[in-house]
Length: 292
Image (cartoon, rainbow, N blue to C red; front, top):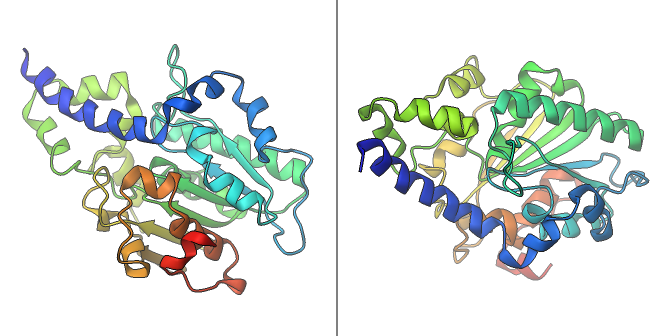
């Protein structure tokens, strides 16, 4: 076996393992339908929804790598809808001939898709600004939109759940790419978003140059110390004004959620999302928040 194949096999396995966790097999049949049609039946992507006085901004959910607008949000979207938010979710970063698994295209192009989607949501709801909540790549990619595509004027808050804000080493595995000629080029050609998310990539260098944040936007990062995909987990944190970095185990020490679970099923993390969206009415997040 060629050296680069030996390298990419464990890298791919690790990422696909996270993807399989995020996309349960029981929902694949549902995802096979038109996702824009399926989501409203669950209460989100309802373009007739008008934000309430209590929650005046629509919430746009941004899925992670290998995920999609339905399966990534089967837990959080209903949680927010039940709390009277207008909730919307997009698909982005699609590759030709690859169904279900999105978030694989060049991240700067994905940010352009987010820009278009936010404009659509704001037009439909009549709101001046939106709040963004993203998991993994979906918590980092919007920062390109905010910084380079005028998003700061249309976004009030960005909440990142296990976001790879400064890339990932995949526990050091990604750093091995430099030792195998052509491996990085192959990764970039086949799945550009994966290459963009490796710590030290040209995309991330540009994104983080001059500071992590832009004025006028509130930032929240919700991380878990058991994250096995975005490593080291502290690399998820942002530095700058209007930033709150949260380690979920500081709120509930027995929370064992890893990278996928914190975005898919962790109601303690969901409670922190709700606090970030409505800080004026935030309540303490504890282990008991799981039943809230």
